[in-house]
Length: 200
Image 1: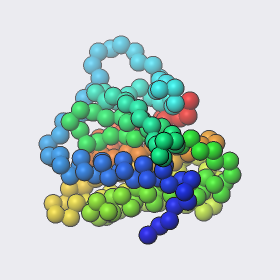
Image 2: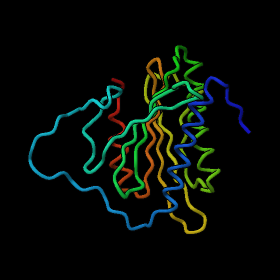
Image 3: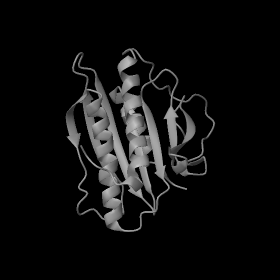
């Protein structure tokens, strides 16, 4: 069992809850899901958009929408969550923004480890087996650039795969961009969009 400092507990537990919800949805969906459609028409699109006054990013992929929620630890708001989803699809992007201030490299390193570990534990507890993983080097990281963790999970009973990429970056707060997809086409689309996410 991994013990998480109390000041981080609410945020990390919320991150794990999201991962578990994604896994549950993945397990209940059929394989024949619709793929993202290309945008129609010739109207020019803006190169970047502002989302909920929290982040900026490239325009949303076709047929995807954003919703916003807050994370609570008891009655205290500890962060914000943006969900990029498409109706009927498992594949999604979750952007989590922590309210807690992270001033030093050591604080950012500890937070990044907790973020990655929390998501890994969630998929493991849901019964998915990691068949591929690529973890970032956190010990010597100065956190001036985005860190990436990539995973491929497999459901033991039928071999279906779940593609996961976690992007972590910092200002004086922690940002987690979690991409979860049930097919490679969606994963390529959504990881590309996720890399465009920047603080507002």
